[in-house]
Length: 115
Image (cartoon, rainbow, N blue to C red):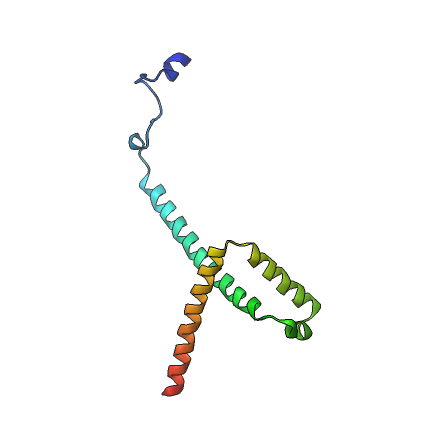
């Protein structure tokens, strides 16, 4: 019996052997699409947070240590260290996203002042 299951020409197999032989429930496909969309939205929000945090951390210098509490300074250092562990491409993408958003907001503010 095991030999029949393992034999490559066995046509009495119980489970589909290829993706083409499988049918996927349309509800399952819709659910997976929804999940992917949620993950992509979460990724965009996380990239925005990362980009904004990177901009803030890049502005820190010795003068900030004087005005921040020890706790805030440690949190900033932790943030900087964590950003440093991320792939450069991800940080670059996050920075580009935030810089574009900041440019749009800056343009909007300047248009409001000119009216």
